Every structure is written in structure tokens, then in C-alpha cells.
Image (cartoon, rainbow, N blue to C red):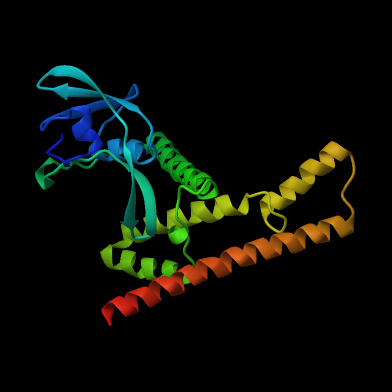
Length: 235
């Protein structure tokens, strides 16, 4: 339920009102405020059609989430912002249990969400719409692991899952040296009907090593730069 609307926001321009309950977005059912956030965050500057329950009457509103830079535990990211708030109360929270099949479906859905968000970020990075601040290395991962461990085992496991999926995606990129690079070689071999020469493969591995090393160095540089800014701010 909408409990707050930011002035000058996309929600205000679209005509959202306090007490509105978002039922669906572009025809896809919305079961919670978090579901709505996920859709909106990945659809910045994209027109969306919201079906809203307003006092028992279904109303359609059209809004375009505004692109905003948001600071997250993983860095600064640009997401779509609608401009609505929901003050969910603990007494309204509920625990939902799933059977094995439901758990597998939910795990697949969550995995796909991470893959989709990562792909969207990389695409935005390529066309200049995303910031490189979100690229983090081992220093930031260690910091986040410590912070999640303090919050509880479930948070730490969630972080481990996100990192595992991200590393798995990176490993599948068609870059020589990674598993995706091997798959690329196999595909080329299948098309050509013969393997590439050792010289070509070795050159590819050198290029892949350079790319992977450069990414690691840049991510670590980001971590050090962020720490330096924090120390300067504290000082």
C-alpha cells in the first residue's frame, strides 16, 4: 500500500494517491511492495502501466520511473525510482513456506533476477548509463562479508549466493582463459571442422589473461579509492 509520495516524483506526475495498492505492472501481478520495487528499478526511463486498487475500484496509471543514483552496500547504482513509500508494520509481516518444487522455482526466479540485473548493469556500463563505482574487488567483498555476518547467517548466505552467481556468470563470458572461452573455442572448432592452431589459442589465452587481470586491478583500485575517500571524510 502506498503510504507516501515524493514531491516531483514520477508517481506524483502519474496521479498516485495515498492508500493505493499496486495490483499489477504491465499485466504482471505484483504480490508485494518488494515485487513492485524490482520491476521499477529495472525499468528506468521506461513507461509502465500500473493497475491500482483504489478503494475497491481498479484504476490504471501510466508512469515512467526516473533514473537515480542510489548508494547500496555494493556501491552506487543507477535504478528506476517511482517515488512511493510503504510503511510496512511488523504485525503485517508473514512467513511463507515452500515445498521442494516451490523452493526450486523460487531459487530459479531469484537466480534469474540476479542474472538479469547483472546483464542490465553491464549493458548500461557499455552505453555509459551506469557508473563503474559498483565494480568491487576482494577488499569490498571482505567488508561486506563481515557486515552480513553481523546481521546473521541468512544474510551471509544470501551474499554468498549472489557472489556465486556473479562469479558463475563471469566464468561463462566468451573470454579465453575462462570456461566461456573454452566453449567459444569448441564452437569455432565445430564450425571450422578442425581445431585452431596452438599459436592462435595461446594468443587468445594471453588476451584473456590481460582482460581478467585488468578487471581485477580496476576493481581493487575502486576499493582502495573508496576507502581513501572514507578516511578523508572521517578525517
